[in-house]
Image (cartoon, helix red, strand yellow):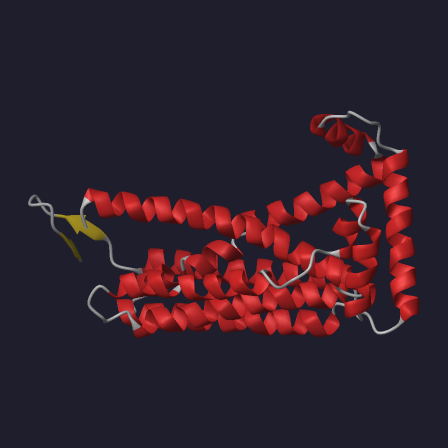
Length: 270
């Protein structure tokens, strides 16, 4: 691969990262604003479930093209298909009632709610809640305030600050504790464990099944067991699993034969 193609791949990955970042923020927000209040937790969890299924399906596709000449091109190219389908599908979706109401389009907000709710009572109740929420925001918001001023006001508001701290801490903890690194580099981990490249790619795809099972359990329990119990239990299981993974790597390192380097630059174990 020459430098020109290498630069194209890096640019493509950067653009893909921007797209995924926007989508991963917008999609759960859209689902939450369109869903019934009693179903929001379950539907947002289902979003994560289908994201995990996509990772599993992508792993299967990678396994199919692992032994194909220049199969990586097909891996990258086929990834554009679900993105294109999602783009076309979103063209037919309406704006959320909350956004329409915040833009002053209350008639359109009522029309959208009427199309996704079964009774007029539900529509009236949610429109009333949206009006109250908007009135409360306008009451605490001065005209002409900048974005930084609004952020500073939120940080000074104790309930908002605590909610922001909890949310950010959970996201930081999720990234620092390593499940994403394990999933993203599963193929490399399997290859380091002695499997060949093709088998490692297949195993990395099937590794996502464990995450899917956990998400299925979350979808079933999120409205009954509660969020706090699920967070505490899942973090405990993550800590145990990562401890076991770390210990397995440590035991493998201390029990393996030492590596020596020859004068010609080669290496062997003895």
